[in-house]
Image (cartoon, rainbow, N blue to C red):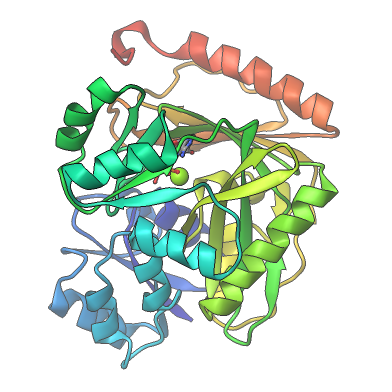
Length: 368
Ligand SMILES: Nc1ncnc2c1ncn2[C@@H]1O[C@H](COP(=O)(O)OP(=O)(O)O)[C@@H](O)[C@H]1O
Ligand SMILES: [Mg+2]
């Protein structure tokens, strides 16, 4: 099987490693020179919507997928009559626009925080009247890792929020005073078989994922989450892995956003589950049977952001993943997974790891 992957970042790299174990060959398109996935297969250096590069990928692969959420839907549609493209481009279209995404949650009876479409300063005033303060103003498109967002705490913040978010195609969301955040990861194959991973609990700082732990041992929340993610997978006629990010507020889940791709909050599954989310994605898009995920312990994941630690001594229960990217403030450069025999053992390992990672960051490379 030849898999074409649009985007050759760390998600492409981890897909490429999983593909190798399945005896599949990968090739990639990415505009950046020497991207992380170059170690897994040939990369055509081209824009994500380069017609020639896409046509060549379509001609030389059995199936095409993507690891990057902002591939133009029209570019995918152009090759979809020549090669199967999964997840379906229409599902990607929903995920690319926060307004369409939230309208879909409403349509599928998936609870979410109140929101308001904002295209003018008057809309923003109306949003404040409807949602109260604080609220989060977000660009509808292209946001990631907390970028393109502004928390409005008082009326005086309105003009600067309006300006920083670019002044049109925005959405205002009520501030959710959540207890914690979780994500549900599910996969569906071409034949319609669905599997769900256990709920993962996530911690963000400045909008960037810092740690994930799984499984979250809460059967009521887990069955709610499985219900919501299954509804999304079915409705979108989805093929591949989908991640649904949610807020937990008491006994309730509130949907935040979904990603039509393998997800950072599922990286623990490389060491923590069988199959991993990457293997599951590849099995799904090649229409193979999806084994029910089997947990290999209590997993924790720590993202390495901005600077790689040096001289880090890892315990035997830990695995380091280095994406091979250059340092840059706020950039995800790698992650470490720990596997414990119990949630308590895992939490202790993760706490220890956090401390040693902080100590191993070279001072000269400290993020300002
Ligand atoms: N309405 C909200 N209330 C409270 N926190 C929020 C809200 N929206 C976003 N956040 C915080 O910001 C993080 C990033 O926002 P998100 O909508 O997931 O955008 P991104 O596409 O950047 O991941 C969330 O994981 C959460 O921690
Ligand atoms: Mg998010």
